[in-house]
Length: 96
Image (cartoon, rainbow, N blue to C red):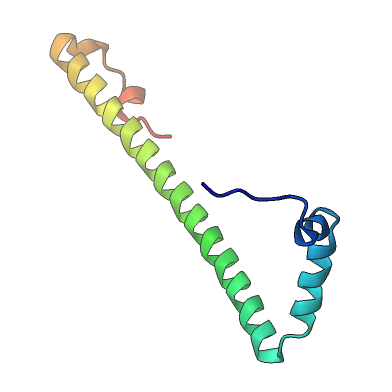
């Protein structure tokens, strides 16, 4: 069991916002290469997440279109089998 004491000076600084100030000070002390690396990583992560989200949305849209066309084909097949005269040209040319 780990017990964390909130009375330590370190925790008091964190809860008073001193930790953020120390973090920004420590970042400003980094070399230019380290700053560039951090910024490059953040930009790469944002681009990767954005592209992943866009590709996922496109895949979902394609699957929904495929499923709707397949369902329309099933309906046409069932209707052709039961009542061929009931199938309309609009249903045969169904598109989203």
